[in-house]
Amino acid sequence: MNNPRLISVVGLQNSGKTRAVNALVKCWVQQGLRVGVVKHDGHLQPGQSDDWEKPESDTEQFTASGASYTLLTGGGRTLLRAAADPDAADPEALCRRTAELAERQGQPLDIVVVEGFKRSDLPKVAVLRDESHVKWVNQAELTGLFAVIAPAAVSHLVAVDARVYDENRVDSLCFDFWHNDPKVRR
Image (cartoon, rainbow, N blue to C red; front, side):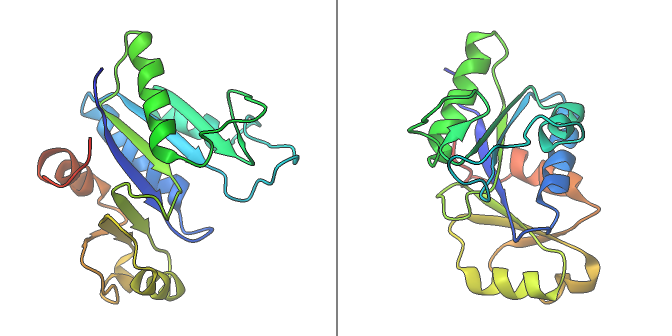
C-alpha cells in the first residue's frame, strides 16, 4: 500500500484551521498531488446530531478545494455513519482507513491532512490568529510541531522550535513539507 505523508493542522477554535486546510489542499492539488482530509469535530458529543453535510460545511469546502477523500469524525462516529467507531479517537487509524479506501479505488493518496487532534503524535502545523493564540502555542508543548501559520502582526511573538510561515504564503510551507523535511512520518 502507498503510505501517504500525514500532517495535522491544529489551533484554538476560530483560529483559521479550516481555511488553512483548504489552502494546503489547493496548493498540493495544484502541484499534482492527491490529497485526503480527516477532520476531527472536537465539539460533537455522543448522541448529538451533526451538520457535517449542510451547504457550505467543511465537508463541502474540502471537496471544493480538491480533496480526493474526506472523513469526518466526532462524538464516537464518522461521516461513514458507523454507529460506534472504535477508531474515532485514533487519527493515525483514520488516516490509514482513508488511504486504504483511496488505494482500493485506484486513487492512492500522497498526503492526508488532518484537521485537529492536538494531542496526537502526527507532525503538526499550528494556526494562529492573534496574541492569545500565540500564547497558547508557546505554552502548549505540542509534539511533532513542524510549522506555524500566523499573520505578520503576531508572527514575531512565536517562541517555539518550528518555522513560522505567513498566512498568505502556505505555498512555501507546502513545498518545505513535501520536499525537504526528513522527519515527516509516512
